[in-house]
Length: 291
Ligand code: NDP
Image (cartoon, rainbow, N blue to C red; front, side):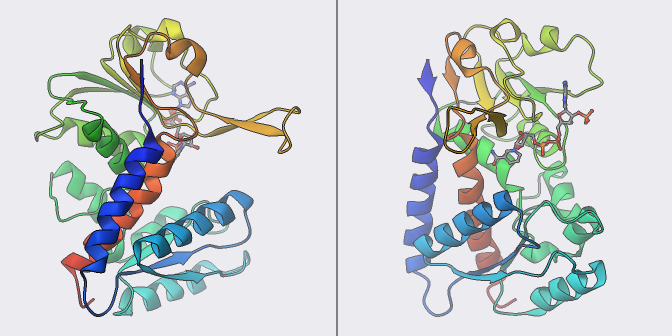
């Protein structure tokens, strides 16, 4: 079994971006990071994004509206960033408070600055195989991780567990694209799927993104399969200082014994998500240098 090291691959991407950004004369690419409220996970995600941007030489602008912000005021803030020629990418950290329509917010971000890739136009561009769009960061990170680990999806059966707009659907569309590295036969499973293990056992490449701790067990995996674990779940663990441990959607101890390659959690897909956000920001700058 080979461990797919997301930290290592993400570090290589960050080093490439750093070299690219160093060669830009004048203004550097800028990402606006909007975090509403003080959700602890969001606080740490935005900190990590800010830190990685600085490491690459990008400018970041962190905007922290209060939890009570109205949808209209959040729209006004996004409109302002959309119109600001010194901002190349906009990220609105999810989750947003319940009174705000998250999809409407994603749609409000200008497609040219939608480095998170959740705008309707950018999701549509994946289906059209239009490379001028922005692919959402986790699916893009999964594809990059597979490519850089020498996994060619051509002719393979890829089974995706989960159909969210953030992970499952876009990664399924990417694997389906008729281009080098992709061109797979894709099955997408969800909570309405019957006899799920019979389908997952057919997977040459299994991508688990359902948000259920250690759901995928050895009896659900074909020996020699490549297993990508997207899940990030907090499982109570009184023995730890934090009171919990992080685990994926895959039961790593048993599945790693029969997979040919597997991503760990943490240290697999997670670091790739941040690296791809930075890559999208640099792409936004290159595509629209004077937004
Ligand atoms: P969602 O909750 O939005 O979607 C979960 C999907 O899994 C849904 O399609 C749901 O089906 C399906 N599902 C849930 N339970 C089952 C089940 N028992 N059997 C079959 N299908 C099931 O989750 P996300 O896609 O946002 O995230 C998935 C996981 O990935 C989470 O652990 C999340 O924390 C993690 N994640 C990690 C990221 C990273 O950077 N590594 C980034 C984003 C997410 P249905 O549609 O029918 O409800």
